Length: 107
Length: 121
Image 1 (cartoon, rainbow over the protein chains, first blue to last red):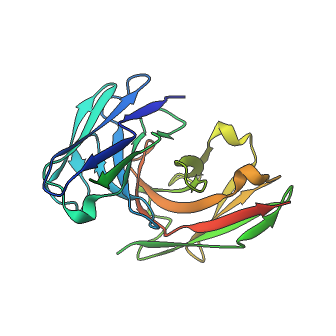
Image 2: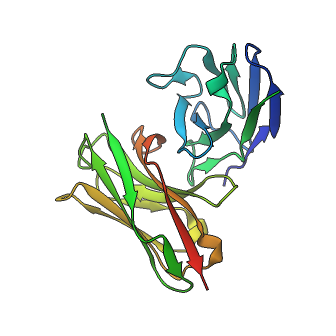
Image 3: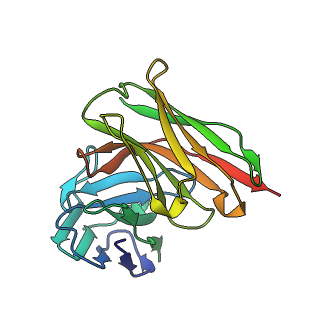
């Protein structure tokens, strides 16, 4: 099973700042990596798939990069609605697995 | 617009079987492009993939569930269901259904709003 490790666990930033979230895989997944946003009390929402492709309706301030074992989700200028928990998920190998999450909180 | 909605008992007794249904609207579960899956999230914790159905009717389950999970389609109702046997307190969680995209190796979107299931002793 591929283990995904996200860092940091908590990221405290202010609106307007740039956020950089990391996801590291225990073995290569190519570009088979997705990112999800989960706001409090809501279901996860797909943000990025294929490591760098934005899902429908996702603003262009969200971008993903990386391949192999190291991946990054970047939010260029934080808006108030962006603060949430973000999870990465690999689909390069079964069982599909998720990272433990990064909480993006308002500073 | 595709929407998914989970339904089922919110309370299940330990050692019994958890049963949930996902109703899909705005699209058909027989669409050969998609996968239909279940994911769970214990309160305050992260996400765990349970399993799901591929377009050809085959299913894949997370081995961590040790064969306790069964996912079945009901094409006449455009639903798919989850049964999890021999539940314990560790199975208490929010349960989400979601559509998978990408063929045999999938990412998920959209998700249902989730159903909370509590296992009681």
